[in-house]
Length: 184
Image 1 (tube, one colour):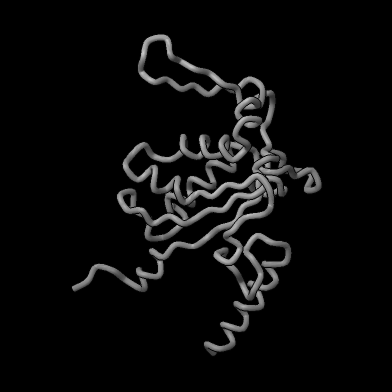
Image 2 (cartoon, rainbow, N blue to C red; image 1 turned 30 degrees about the vertical axis):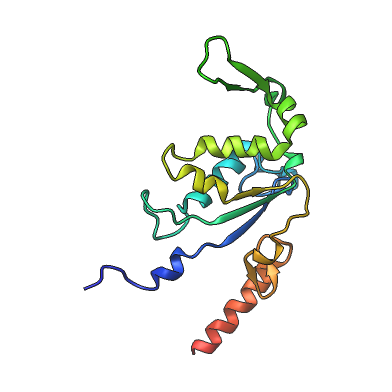
């Protein structure tokens, strides 16, 4: 007898999520009130949300040993929001195991040299578990400096509206109501 209940093949299918690093987000904002003072998500909050989606922890079938995460497309990485003076004080280190070869670079220099997508990739990489699935999960992160990206057709949609775009909640409500009427 099988131990699986329900349509697990559908649960293991990968979905494409779209996140904008510059759009104000109510739940990921560092300022909660008043509502008009909501900021774009800070680098750490954005990276932790992305890491959760890449691991698949948002799914009910999540298991630490299986790779059941989704794809994430992040746009507007050039406008990453950091709090405090991290942009000028945070340093990234690299070492090639030879004596005296420790190299340091600050976040603002890294952003100028490689763009905000590399800073976001390093933050997400630090939040993923350090195991053999890390590189596979990180390969599903697609980060872009502007709005343009080649994955527009892959994004999750409700009735033709991309999830996360303005007005998608209304379209999702209409689709769900139509689905409930069909069941009755």
